[in-house]
Length: 147
Image 1: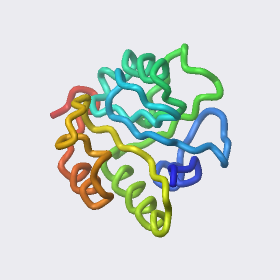
Image 2: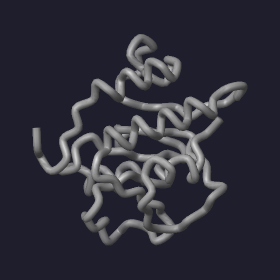
Image 3: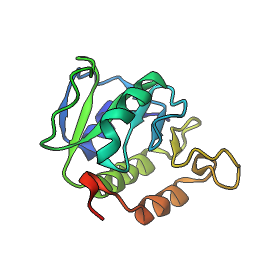
Image 4: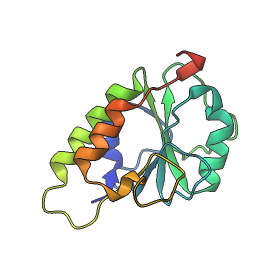
């Protein structure tokens, strides 16, 4: 099962851009310079988001998460959905919890890309949702250069 626009909006309620309830995200990526078909791009470090957004779009991102109160770059397409958040980690944990509930009896699922490394031992999308939840809880987000 792919992540729907509606599910993402439950975790990140404030949005901008084209609202399409039947839009599906097949990939969630924290990495801009990797293929992310129908991807939702979520930057780990906000300070690199502006340059990374362009790369992510070029690699297939069709939506992104953005820090609340910050203006998207002028090149951001009008139809490109932006989901705003004050707390990225909290929003991701909520999104994963909602997604986990909907995974029961589903054949297809969204790939989560946490690393550029393609080793099967290190690619998180080869793990189940419990491992993805653990990976998100361990993440250290650095918005606006704060440690």
